[in-house]
Image (cartoon, rainbow, N blue to C red; front, side, top):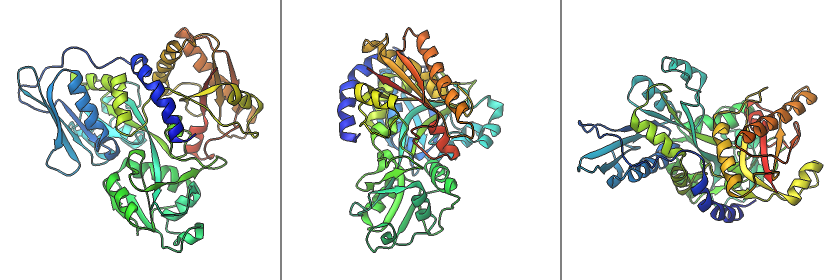
Amino acid sequence: MTSRVFGRFWNRALPLLLVTLGSASGNSLAAPPTPPDGSAVLRVHGSNTVGAKLAPMLVAGLFEAKGLQSVRIAPAGKENEQRITALDERGRTVQALVAAHGTGTGFAGLKDGTADLAAASRPIKQSEAQSLAALGDMRSAGSEQVIAIDGLAVIVHPDNPVQSLSVEQVAHLFAGQIANWRELGGADVAVELHARDDQSGTYDTFKELVLNSQGQALATSAVRYESNDALSQAVSRRSGAIGFVGLASVGKSKALAITDGDSQPMPPSQALVATEDYPLSRRLFLYADPQKQSAWTREFLSFVHSPEGQAIVEKSGYVAQAIAPIRLPLQTTMPEVYQQLAKEAQRLTVNFRFAEGSAQLDNKAQRDVQRLIDYLNSHDKQMNAAVLVGFGDARNDPARTALLSKLRAMAVRRELARGGILVKEINGLGDQLPVASNSEAGRIKNRRVEVWVY
């Protein structure tokens, strides 16, 4: 499914979704009080991927939704820091600060009290969660907020003839083991490596999904960047360059299709990123103190999940957590039940994911249940229209994998039933149709429940 085709579905579905999406809207009548000392009402530290564009736009959107006037986003005097200002009804300045110096700095800000929210382009690490244990459970639904989906695009110069690479090839490239593009069917041009810096969640994700999965390390010759956009601009100007950026920062560079394990080559299209099937897709997060949150922090998180907030996510270039239908091409290699669905039904751009060996929905899935209920209600598909297809990751016990895949579909059916939705049927296809390799990160993607509608 190309981005252009998906866009048609998206444009058709979005207006209705903006009315029906099921999170509470942050657009209540009154704004929380303005601090008398003029201090920032929101301090967001962390990921450059989140903080360069998305977080300032979301803060500005909240200010506007609260009726504040003269909303403005401007540099804060330091590189990769922005200040969002507005005027309340008494003409007093309301301000927020977004400091985008890398995911790790956000968790450090939560720990020392200089941040209200940590922006992250990867899940919190075990070591980080332990260091913040005094605040509470940082992996709880009250702390961990999935705000958008991003695709980690592998980019090259627009004239590079190479169209797709495997995760393994990308790892060998960035490890410096492939020195010339002719080794991959390209031109006789030396490979130049461009990578994000060590503080970046983008780099952490790339390292986890690409380098670590192949037992590789980044070559010391790589040029490092604090900014996605600066990296993309450099790659677009140099014929042998290759880099990686967030989906919204591809710019004038060319994004390659990526394969992982037995998956088909997948471009970083909105449809494939929305379902998280694309091998290098990832979630973007905000983490908050799970127990002590200011009124402004609570209002902001509510707004981010609201239809208005998710519309800003879409406008910023990332993939919103809205639901739209897509058609999948029929392939003879598909299982028979899946071929039937591809012929007669449409897949929705939502996947439910689970922990290893578990049928318990993760934090994102819990919110997606309500989004799906609202979508099915708004399209008059409450009764016998939806089909759930569960999948598992390849293990030594295929029978257990098949059982777990069906149990996961049953778990989603149970949650939908609580919202008045009667599912037409459920299927458990075990480890068939993998969308990723059998690495740890790949298994997470393969443990999923897809939703189809007639």
